[in-house]
Image 1: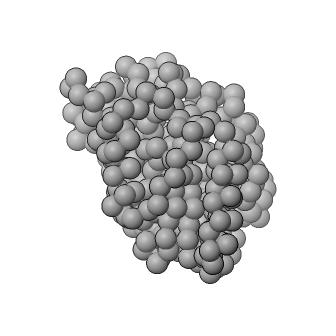
Image 2: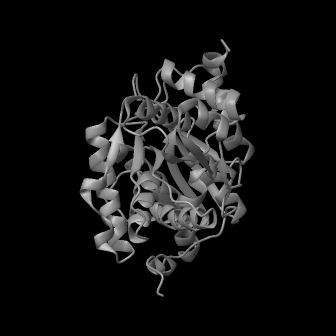
Length: 341
């Protein structure tokens, strides 16, 4: 039988992470919510605290290596997981890293700017650049291109990881492969899952899972929990990325606009900012399962899962996979706001 996602192998890939990651049962937290809960542990991908960005960057760094790059450039929020892992991946492959930190969270204090991912960036020897804008992806990419031009003038061979849509979403290929990993693990358990829940930000994880599962004839819905944009804008982002991914793996039928499912109930007051639902989710996961979640992505994703169960959007008794996308260094950067515990 032919592999329905074999076309992924045509793209250059740098093997960076630990895979397959565990699929762990979470019986105590599941019982508290009234579901059968499993956690896809992509916080265990390795490489400088791991997370979902490791899978995504395998394809970006594969292309960078194929082009002979010696420097990787990336942009993200001050506490960006992508920036941290890109700097680590560059180091592992013998490349320098220039990282651009965007001002997306206006209430960040001393800890936010010095601890967590920023501390790891500095330990990795990345060159840090500040960008005063925070929600303008085109401006962020343009600033990176200017920096890349200056480095090229110095004789360097830069590779830019862009943030704005409009280019092939290479990072999503990592989650097309992760979908196969999940399907294989479910088969080994002799089980089928009713739903998948993940954070939805850049849309690479969400869209990659959606396209991969559909290509593999796995029909469970993928519930994306908004962490950066409202549901309307995020649904359009997921659809754009998923459509491009389906074309890239030569399975255009694997994208169905009607299958895009996003919810922004846990988003307010905005990206990287806490609310009571996120605090509750982080506390429940830690105290029921010793499962640590971060305030920016997985805390909001778990808050969304809890809201879905309480509202009936995910039926009680369902078998649910929660995708733990990592991001744990940010816990320390938010210590002043989580300290009441």
